[in-house]
Amino acid sequence: MFKGSMVALVTPFKDGTVDGEGLRKLVEFQISNGTDVLCPCGTTGESATLSLEEHERVIQVTIESAAGRVPVMAGTGSNNTEEAIRLSRHAKKAGAAGCLLITPYYNRPTQEGLYLHFKKVAGAVDIPIVLYNVPGRTGVNMLPETIERLAKIPTIVGIKEASGSLEQVSQIINRCGEDFAVISGDDANTLPMMAVGGVGAISVTANIAPALCASMIRAVQAGDWTGARRIHHRLLPLHNAMFLQTNPIPVKTAIGMMGIVSGEVRLPLCPMPDDLNAKLKVILKQYELLH
Picture 1 (cartoon, rainbow, N blue to C red):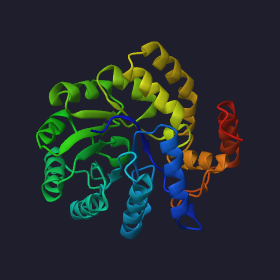
Picture 2: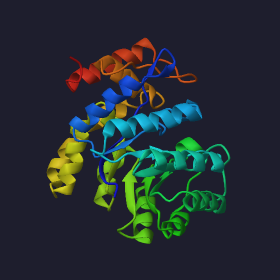
Picture 3: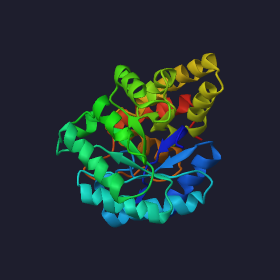
Picture 4: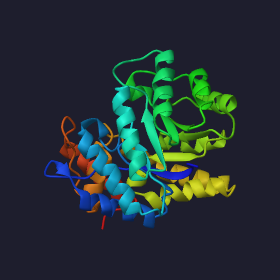
């Protein structure tokens, strides 16, 4: 259901509020450049600092703007199980094709707690669910055996895996089978993950270079591994640039430099210093992303 080149969509702000018109512009930019799935309200979408009302509005506007042309996998995760249920119910009502749910952060639940959290959300909302494992952000790593248990729940259809471990990715694929979608949550690891059975990426870099990111994944899907490796190595400096500081500061700064929408971030994130701005601008020029 969810595969190919997917984007972890940024949330544009203007003077501290969600820029709905800017969000519509981003959706058009993504669809016209070959993105397969839109993923609003994830980490890159600054979901942690969106109010519940803003969160729901961003999902609603994204779905309305996509107008059925591509699926929307709405970020509806929370460290509060009841809040995750509320957001997931809203996403289903709004017309999302699925929900992306991060492992509860800060709470640091046990593996059993993780299982029970996702089981409860899946039992409360009848919508395809993609788990999201990113221990560097949440402080907890969901283990392959826990993912295997969750994969037995019919509506839990995949995982965005960003542990950084290819061994863990391989274990998940071995345990959960081909029908369970394993998606890269780390741009630099997308090609290696697809080599062991991953089905695509939910990408940060695709916010600014969607066509190039999509071309690498299309090459893999076509069996053109030589072409895919060439694009992977071409993209690597750009992937690295997206982490000059905490994501999504660099990617939003890049979008602002490109003139697509404002690069404004919301506190406690803050603008990059001048030296990193200058470094980012040089890299964007190398990729002909500045006009």
